[in-house]
Length: 175
Ligand SMILES: C[S@@+](CC[C@H](N)C(=O)[O-])C[C@H]1O[C@@H](n2cnc3c(N)ncnc32)[C@H](O)[C@@H]1O
Image 1 (cartoon, rainbow, N blue to C red):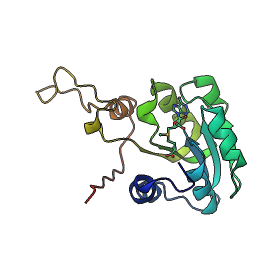
Image 2 (image 1 turned 180 degrees about the vertical axis):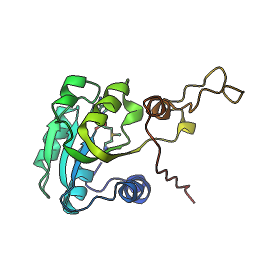
Image 3 (image 1 turned 135 degrees about the vertical axis):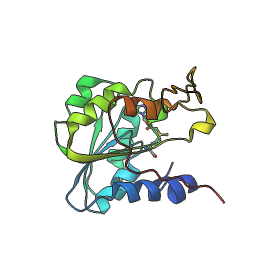
């Protein structure tokens, strides 16, 4: 993927995520699963102070080698509570994860850590593949009946379990 991503990232993911994230100059933003760092540099170009993380050394090396606004790139496995804690308590105004959560084997460590990493009132914005494509969908036995246990996407369900309030949802249909 290049600096600005493919059409899906350019036209759908990044505009929707930016709208929800609404970064303002000087805000501290943590990116989870930054890949080659293209979106992190876009945020830094808007004046945010960005810490961008990925579990893959090769991606972080490529991100560090790229030209562009200053970003603090770090190798972090977002399933590892200790590595997440090292990012610093209450250090961030916002966190973002673009097309990452559906690839992670466990989400609880990240959701727990974000509650500590974000400042009070901080926001977490993520984009995932729509569950209709089969990512993270775990049908519950009572789905659609009385006593339905709630959202059936694992991504949504773990958030719900930990008391996160969903305050924004953007979905864009392709024409
Ligand atoms: C589909 S790519 C998306 C990259 C980038 N966010 C973007 O939108 O271009 C998924 C990224 O998540 C990273 N990733 C997957 N599991 C991870 C984990 N446990 N911790 C940190 N990064 C992870 C991968 O290394 C990869 O860079």
